[in-house]
Amino acid sequence: MTQTVISIVCPCFNEQEVIHTFTDKITGIMSATDFSYELLFVNDGSKDNTLSVLHELAAKNTHIRVLNLSRNFGKEAALTAGLDHAKGEVIIPIDADLQDPPELIHDFLREWQKGYDVVVAKRIDRSSDTLAKKITASLFYKFHNSIADVEIPDNVGDFRLITRRVVQAIQLLPENQRFMKGIFSWVGFKTSVVEYARQPRAAGESSFNGWRLWNFALEGITSFSTAPLRVWLYLGVFISTIAFVFGSAIILKTLMFGVDLPGYASLLTIVLFFGGMQLIGLGVMGEYIGRLYMESKRRPVYILENDSAATDTENNNNDK
Ligand code: UDP
Ligand code: MG
Image (tube, rainbow, N blue to C red):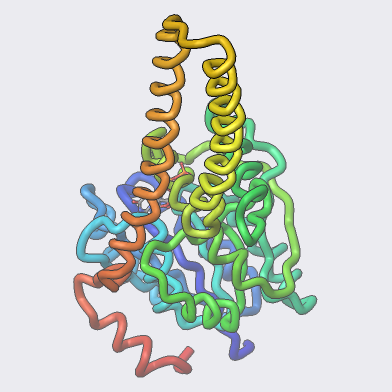
């Protein structure tokens, strides 16, 4: 038995149907390794019986710990709570729905033993996703990576292995709007990639619909790039230059040939066009200002319903 503790961190929102299967699978896999481990569930304000199912499991299995958030804070916050309270030397965030195949944990551990601080799982087959999700996901990665400061590897989710020092680096990032994919990439460290095929959900349903995914994408882009803000400067200079040339031509023409009235259609088109452009520019600024405003409140990322788990972590850090 080694000292090392592996923490499997699993955020759960309305996952009552799948938790038993998930736990059985993880338990099977982890008991086949030599490492001591904990399975840390974060209940993210589930509306179903997830919490009582988790408590039942924890009562029977000493490897299981449960954190309960005071309401639904979203997956990013739940994951942050899990990272903050995990005791392990190595932390593996994983979804409850078995879309991230737990068998991969063996590969993660093998890579970690080779000396990697981060082992990510790359989906090579997304056939379980809808066509729309595949297309929008691919567009998002392309757009994000072309404008953001850090590149998010294509088709890599939160399912990964990170060591304690990576977690400590992540905890240095003070922002409370947490786009974890970006944060994981931003901190860097020596990374290895393991490939896998994405499974369909084992049970229950996805809580990410189109609108939520759109907002998630906006979050990702605005968190790691200011290009959408700066592009207006260049667009403005470009359009003003054209307007100046066009205006000079009209003035010259009027001076040489006198006034002529037609031009209503082109005038209206230009007015509408610039009206639209200005609104878009303002809208983009609004996105960033909104985020600045939220960030400036310095609210905590999540609230635990009952803080005993937090003190528990501080007092017993090395007891496993
Ligand atoms: N999740 C969460 N809080 C939320 C939404 C989701 O903790 O507000 C968890 C969920 O229980 C699951 C993981 O995040 O373990 C991924 O969610 P989901 O399967 O709905 O997303 P998808 O796989 O469709 O991207
Ligand atoms: Mg899922």
